Length: 378
Image (tube, rainbow, N blue to C red):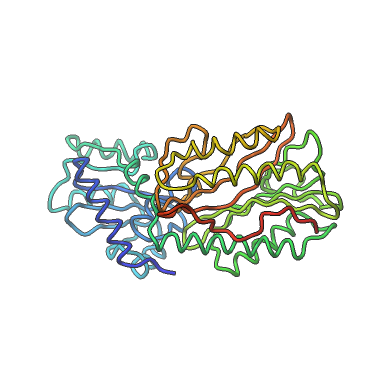
């Protein structure tokens, strides 16, 4: 699914409105392949161009055509065909080309908006100060982030397809999981199904082992462990944090499976987690403070004799983490917000969690995932 010119115009007109409000006549946005923070999503949001590797940058004037510089000729060629930026150029030296492009503008910028100053390389900052000593640098990151919180219809459709890929991956694991499989085989099942559904990237974590007092069911990447891939045994429980990206947009599904036999202790924790999610999502509607909804989950989980712990989730979109879900969250829910909600339920040294992806609608919310929220035994 390709984003339309209508979606481009929606974003660009709002960007220019916010530039005018901040006294900015030209915008500099940049991105690289790092997904954490906002290094990846801001550039893609404005250009509809994926950074495949290296760095890219965008000069976005108020009243002139934008110019994008890319680390490789291959990426620039694809950007000319697929992005919203007609003038996409190969750049072996980004900051030099940025400086030259700013000098070539018909109107030299008095205020340069930067998305964002917190990620601006020091060498770039020094070069800009040297070349344009009288030009102000204005932080525009928060303005773009606020825009990105509210998704348009086309963005929600991409997130929906991402969630459908997650559902298919989980269904594949439930269908074929059995004792004797190694963790990497489970992830292979999962990601093969999600790739077949159109997923273009994955951030999948796994936990396997007996769930009992003292066990923190915290998933991790196989490559982050001393033992690279554990063999799953009868009596184990398996937790998957399933996170595909589709068309640039992330979703997440957190599910737990018993292997070989039921686990009564895990069932109690799972029930508390699901009851907490139900309590919170009853308040997922426009005008409600996100932290207020989380407090509803806290009350239900504590009434069951457990603690509510974090991380509890995050707002997502082109970046997996665009804002955290916390008890202190001040964000007011608005239609178009996409929320991953997965509260951790704990008691002492023991904990687990469950969750999925939601979108706020004009009259409430809708769950993007359709995977059952039961605790299956396979």
